[in-house]
Length: 131
Image: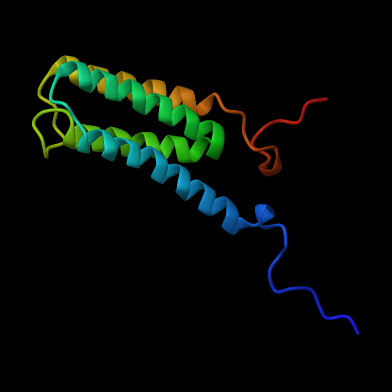
């Protein structure tokens, strides 16, 4: 006699757990890039500007590999991480310099636009069917 089907599906990519883990991993990738930039920071304005560019690149890669929502949530995590540990005053979310505050806001706008440029997952009905 043949045994019954296994308790778990063989193709894990179609399960909800896979989608959740993939999303969580994308969020961790984005946020950890901000943490790494804050750990290895050089306290110059040029580094602060470069860290925004590097973070935007990481958000774009996250959107491409993991999806829209992990990139959006990860960009918020990166913004908060950089605001606290890279932009002065350190340890506070309030940024004193207006130019750096504007740069961080422009980063967030660009990160949202970058994340939303990725097409949605066709399996979830987030995109309209074309004729």
